[in-house]
Image 1: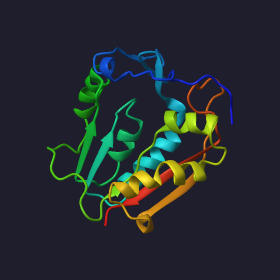
Image 2: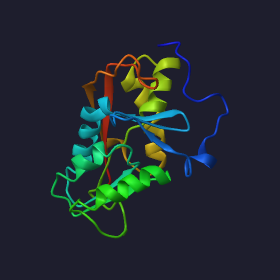
Image 3: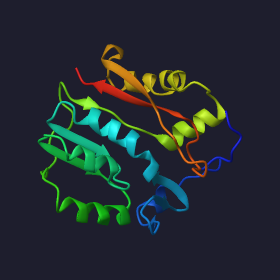
Length: 190
């Protein structure tokens, strides 16, 4: 576990300003920050592609929460899916999403999002990075204790949950994740 400074101060809440805050992409398009907080970095590409591969593995509809730098979204679009929905709450990132979407093949309007046989996967590098700095030294244990109970409460069944551990290499200057492993969850809807 690391003693690095947390990304969010105790009690800090960025929700109110997030929608209208500037989406600050650096000149080389390798980093995105909003309200001075790291949101996504290009080094995450192998992990984001792993998540996108899981999400698109059954075809059909894919729901993506957060567009960031289009890393996962671009990979999702490479699969034979029917629809690809992206929820993005920051206006600046949403504008980039709108431009990107013009050249993508999978467009449509929302319907029932996750039906039987659907696949859910997600990441939370910032929160998981904070937990691994402060409380856990084992990513699988962290996932089992902090994620599985909430997934069960949401109606998913443990027998339909699996994870894959992958090696990643965050750069030393990354403020929100400093571990050489990441977990790709696959949660099937019964």
